[in-house]
Image (cartoon, rainbow over all chains, first blue to last red; front, side, top):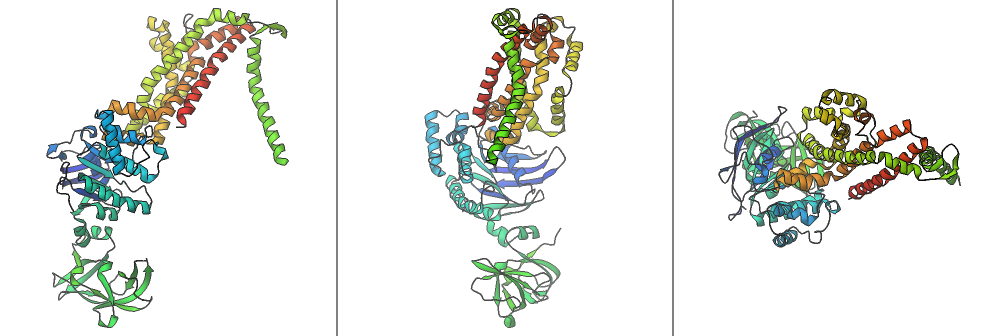
Amino acid sequence: MSNAVGHGASVRIDSCGKTFADGTRALERASLDIARGETMVLLGPSGCGKTTMLRIIAGLEVPDAPGLVLFDGEDMTSVPIERRNVGMVFQSYALFPNMSVADNIGYGLKIRGVPGAERAKRIAELVELTNISGLEKRRIDQLSGGQRQRVALARAVAIRPKILLLDEPLTALDAALRERLRGELNRLLRALGITTIYVTHDQAEAMELGDRIVVMSKGRIAQIGAPRDIYFAPTSRFVAEFIGAANIVEAPIADGHMVLPGGRQPVDGITDASQVIAMIRPETIAVVDAASAGVAGVVVQVSFVGDRQRLTVSGVSDKPIMVDAPNTLSVRIGERVGLSIAPKAVRLLPADN
Amino acid sequence: MRDRLIFAGQLAFTLVVAAFLVVPAGLSMAAGVTVSYFRGIQSGLTLNWVAQVWELYAGTILLSFVIAFATLVVTLAAGVPAAYALHVRGGRLSRAIEEIITLPLAVPGLAIALALLLTYGGFGDFRRSWLFILTGHVIFTMPFMVRSVMAVFATVDIRTLDEGAASLGASAPRRFRDVIVPNAMPGILAGSLMVVTLSLGEFNLTWMLHTPLTKTLPIGLADSYASMRLEVASAYTLIFFVMIIPLLVAMQMLADGKGSR
């Protein structure tokens, strides 16, 4: 997935924390390496410190001592944003209402003293690239949300930044548009190949766009990894529950089996334990005949969502288990069903700390 | 039918109220061109009084405009950056400074004038020059400029716009020129309108601060009411209206034109 011929700079954040003037600790000391050309997504619920981390990289916040921000190994910690050569897309877009679309896109070039003709050529390229032809002379308040988002992106990349920073760029849009723009954005980022740092609270965005994802919680980095690693091999209960749907099961293990109220479930890699915490994704569970299954329970709820149906099965564990079944399966509330779960689909998590 | 009656009633009421306010102003202006106010308009019309006012008080009128525009220049140069700084910094200190700037709205003009006299009265040259009045006017009008600019900053999220411009490489002075000022324009124009009109009409402070050689238009007006024929004072009012109304209309049009963008 990663673009091997990426332009742009590598980013290194070295033990950067942030305490605001009022004493709020927004970010615990964290270190992070982002490779040249990589798309790194900072993902987490609101207040987890992801935006603070982005603003530290941007140069809009200064990290607490002794934190360092390095671009291509060069110390940028005390360099203000206007001299970092980063492109930034803000959640509210921050488009200038006093300028036309073209003037917004060309502003960074104008600041850099790019002559008018060359500027016009670059603006035309970006208008083409971001699919906003015909809007060049419009004022910002005449644009729709999706158009504004494109203009903001065009403006940020016009200056050929070494690093592109995006702060929840799709959050202000409605769901359908968000999904479409996500795909477009993905193609664009791959085409540009510049180092990208993308902040979002939306896991679908993170999965689709990120080469790697940094999951954050309460000002700390909870896990760093490729989308598949984060999804299939979460290292904590927080990550397991935050990304996708997850059943968290607590039970003792005997003879390589989890001992559950609804039966015995084989697991990999451990034979005996007094108590473990395990994650099982709903889509890894298959519904089978109750008589032949290792574990069984009673269906208490059926939610049909079109492409699949989500069953809630009680009696298997101490909490009801979510199961994603094919939409063709015929199942009634109150019916007793067996659950078939591959041993490797049971993911053991460390105990909560 | 009933709606029409209600409409007619409302219209009549509005016109009566408007007349209540406008008629005295009209009468006063008419008196300024009447040969004898006591004999009424039958005594004939004349521009003598106007000419007499011009002869006696042209200096005060000129000085008023000089002071009004100087006040505008100072409040713009100091007030707009101050409003920006107060908005961006936020916090308790900013709140306190904002309150202090706003204080002259609550403190009587006479008290401010007295404080200025006590503090700077000893500086003879300053005390005698029109700059002394300018100081008073700046203190009095500054809150109107700062407040109206800050009100705009609060609605356009100027901080993010500023960060956006910074991310594109613009230095602080450049951002101020390209992004902050243009987007604060409605507030700057509204503030300017208030500053100029308040300065032109200011009496309390100016009355305390003026010297025989630094009289402004309202001081001259009071002077003429006190010591001249009523017709002269009325002619003065007329001149005041003729000068300030086109100015007000022009600035209002400018503000509307910018504001609707």
